[in-house]
Image 1: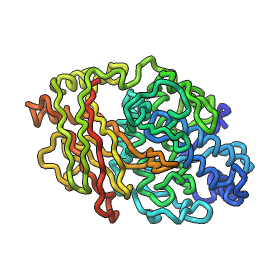
Image 2 (image 1 turned 90 degrees about the horizontal axis):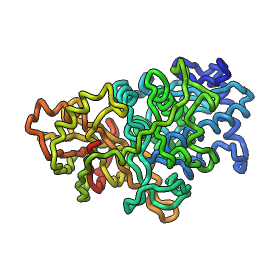
Image 3 (image 1 turned 135 degrees about the vertical axis):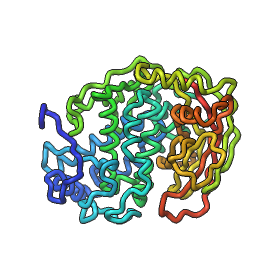
Length: 442
């Protein structure tokens, strides 16, 4: 352990007999054989995720960091390897589930992908998207979902445990999913499906490597050369995560937690930023909250009238991009109160002001903004509806591209949503209810 830190490494290139995978396999096998009343039991560990995990709010990253840390400690104890560190699966570079996870203890036979099958929609994991996430300075928009609010719109104003938003905390909590969560994270879960497509996803041994990779990206976002900062909002830093009894602020510096990644040459503590939360920085906000129903491969549009053009703000954003503390001004679209379809093997492509939009319009089109996938749907737990989702997307680059195509682009931004099935998946006709769209100038 260099410098006393356990090092999490890329699983790519590890064969089934690699010491790291041998230790992992041994630990998993023993966990599966433990009696059901042992808290280290394999299914009991998955039930922690099913009952407590937050999705769609800003506790998503620190909660899963604490979860993986405690699981890793169990693996060290059961394998007898005190230096064991979980590997990560970098799906940007390795676009199929690694071969050792297709045999014996590490196989999950509920997966709906085949061995050597490659990710069929790389836009959700491609390097260009990851680079964009790494460049973004805005913690809430790019890396962590925003703070929660109740279904009637009351924002989080204290650190009561209910704001974790897990099924065991029954009040309805919603937030705006970040790019990291709504695109690569959600997509991998739904692409694999089976156990991975549910809140019992830790039953699939690949789950832990998937979340190691999400954690790695957050750690890289904090570390040089990016050196971006997490929020200093006390509602985030002082929050105690259940059931781990860990405070979020104590989970920011991975060196203090005793580990690093092989991609981090100089891991550094993440210093809190004085930057106020995203929604408090908004210059202007305009919304069209008229619920609509989107059907599979049929567009639904939200034309939002804004008293001022987005063009001057975008010109300012492009000019200030390299010098502003938070990346400069932005034009954001927040798709509100989305009710996911029954079949989660559906993604939603988002376009802006595209007059010819169809299900065949490619994501290379200049009007394309981004996409989001569905995961983190708790469903009905104890009679409480916790499945409404909201997604934040940055329109700035798209508006900049459209300036050349639409020089008269002024006060109407039409956000268009096109639900499409995952490539190669046989999805029946699905409907997605959408509460509305909010345009935010920051």
